Amino acid sequence: MPPRIVLAVAAAWFAAASPAAAYVAYVSNEKSNTVSVIDTESWTVTATIKVGQRPRGIEFTRDGKFVMVAVGDDDTIQVIDAKTQKIVDTLPSGPDPELFTQDAAGKIMYVANENDNTVTVIDLEKRARIGDVQVGVEPEGMTISPDGKILINTSETTNMAHFIDTATRQIVANVLVDARPRFAEFKRDSSELWVSSEIGGTVSIIDPAKREVTGKITFDIPGLRREAIQPVGIGMTKDGKTAFIALGPANRVAVVDATSHKVTKYLLVGQRVWHMDFTPDEKYLLVTNGVSNDVSVIDVAAQKVIKTIQVGELPWGITIANKP
Amino acid sequence: MSVTTASEARRGFSFSEYITCLNGIVWREALRFLHQRERFVSALVRPLVWLFIFAAGFRQVLGISIIPPYETYILYEVYIAPGLMAMIQLFNGMQSSLSMVYDREMGNMRTLLVSPLPRGYLLFCKLLAGTAVSLLQVYAFLLIAWFWDIAPPTIGYLTVLPALILSGLMLGALGMLISSGIKQLENFAGVMNFVIFPMFFASSALYPLWRVQEGSPMLYYVCEFNPFTHAVELIRFALYGQLNLVSLAVVGGCTAVFMIGAIYAYDPSRGLVRRGPGGGET
Image (cartoon, rainbow over the protein chains, first blue to last red):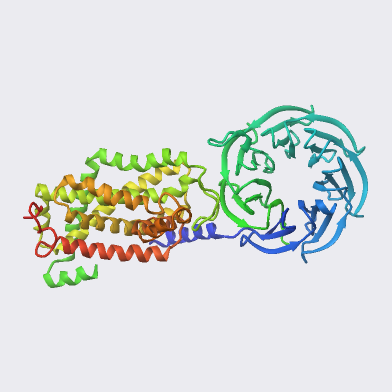
């Protein structure tokens, strides 16, 4: 073989075999009351951290030093030191915290308390509660607009997306969406807000300026009943071109062209796929599969599921950051 | 091959003469295949019918357990693709054995066996020719399957080649062994019923063995002892750049046994061919 071909083959081989950059993923296991730590170089679980009861919402602090996990049945949020992987503190949420979000600076945190119909505002520096906002019944989805001015909360039973002014902490608008809204996500350029409705089986596209639904994404998987298609987690690439939507018991992640709002592909993952997060380089997307107790890894560019990793029981949320 | 090289020295045939012979046989087989366009089409249609129709109906069957070499959940059509590749080779092996029965009936066989080169070598060439034809069919199938979203890693298209050659040789040798016992073309229907169908269905081609074990432990053992299962698994692992050692050993061993059996059977001085009235070679 000519040396040039040998070199090309070797280069291709190394390119294919080169590991992902050093990231670490934290997965909350709702039933086993643990957090699984996944190394994205080896794609293995490197640690399992015992946490409070019913861990669901999970997110790194903006500086990547701590992981916050909402432990609903303990009515608090626990803080894990990413270096020592030990619980070092708790944050004062309301009863049954489920999902939460932070502002861009990582100073203020907003928590949806499922059983209390409130959103708790927490100062992350002082680790103190600084306010509450009354919202609809069973608040869940939480996201903040890229300019930090509007906080979105979706309430599962009221079927609304509440627009909350972060300065006044008052609801400024309510947008009705399909049944049981679970998750909300802004496009980076603030042009659209996406809200997934689990029972409705749709993702509503909302114009954040007009505060009205301008379109809906529907899903159709041959051979599956409509009721089995329950959109939950949403992940959007930074360029705003591609979105991934977890379809719950359909065991699929839909790939959506975020410009035309058309589904381009369905990727088979584990059972009851729930939430997701990208690696910081956006090379991979990790999704939690609640019923099959594992996490599937999607190659974002190839739009292919490349691996599935066993974690604890009923994995729910996931967050990924650089290794500390 | 080293055996033939030794005999070559003994009988004084040059290497190029061996190659000429190989070329002749392979080309004849390839031309025959390419000229029979219906055969090429039907060789492709068969697995595609399975893929497009059968697999579509069973789409939801899998996806609840991850088995090696797969690293994540797969759709049913992805699962059966290696089984269908092996099916192509199984049919092809049997079909080239059919062509040997035909050759025998038409007298072409005599032309072949009249060659001064060792009989074992001639039969081996015939096997290689049949395998080469099956490779054409398998890669054509893979190309169509790619459009159906069955896309193994790129390197897999290369690593599967040795597995395909070995399994092609095994199934071809089996066909040859069987063809030595068939006296007339019409008996081929029996081969379908007694060889092709049982081998194909009692294997891991259509369903993973753990599923079979759940349903019937007895059938599980039958599948485990079926060399076709190991041909399928060898191809399946190779397609994902992995080596299944057990399957390699089984397929390698069976290839050797079937080939020796076929060479023995096609030796008119002792083999099965001579026996009985109406045997092709008289």
